Image (tube, rainbow over all chains, first blue to last red; front, side, top):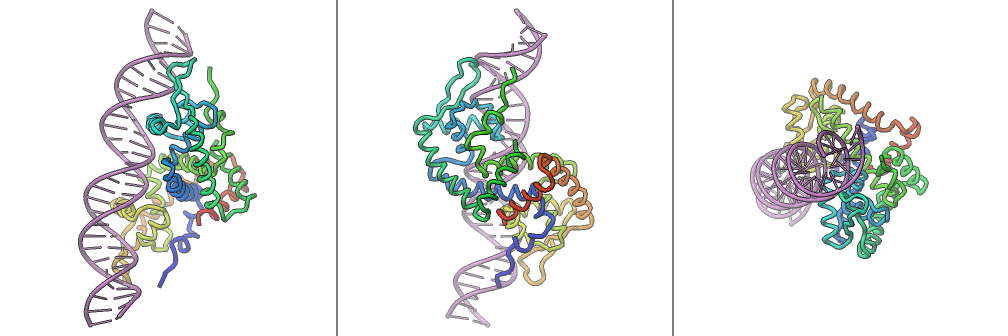
Length: 148
Length: 148
DNA sequence: AGTAAATACTTGAAAATGTCAACTATATCT
DNA sequence: AGATATAGTTGACATTTTCAAGTATTTACT
């Protein structure tokens, strides 16, 4: 007496056609997946994204990080504190504006990132396994247009 | 001395190509938008989705709601409590399984939902204004395949 | 039939996340 | 020079998430 899954039962509801709902669901599934995949590396999704930008070499300030990843500036402080304690990044005072820090990845930050990127890459591949490569590219392209 | 926006600066980073990141960003923007749009109606995004399923007529149980909207069962309790206090839904004990409640929208629930649906519909239209109708349909289709 | 195991809902607590206001230091504007 | 704005930090508080435990009921097993 298994009973239909909730997905089967509610798939045709109006809610299931709302893109905002689908986005929320996709993100929920994704972030859970990502967080457990990253846990072994001592990272959470939120610290991973900051580390990723630090590794980019673009020398983000904390404010820029806050804007780009949609977190309050005060949370960036906490995340950078954590990454700095793990010696993955350093705060480097910016020469031309002494209010700001730019966040730079250490060597260890780079190698940790390389490992983490493998993990998120696999997680993404698994999440999107229903889509062909072409469809994945299309999804990325559409989302990019929506969020930037 | 405006300076480039963080989006301009980080648009080409590896992070910006990760679909999970784009999903998270899209969902963040969307839920903020939705919550403020729904606030006038005494609803949050989370209560809206439950109300929506109650209105569907499919008589969801609380467990089914929890599964479908990715919330812990204990949170469904709180949401249904709230909706019930607002007289938008009722818990109806299921006849063949006395452990379960089926969540049914009241008349007032239906009319509140109608109003709320207008609001989320507009919010979605605004969020997706960069995409053509065809692209929006494609996005919905791709997301549906990913999340169900 | 009778007992064990599983399920639905509820309650309460802890951890994580989100939001906001105030503060210091520095930079920009006029 | 003085007013105004910005970057980072701290701390408080609200919301959300995650868990563990309890009760009632149903299902599975013998």
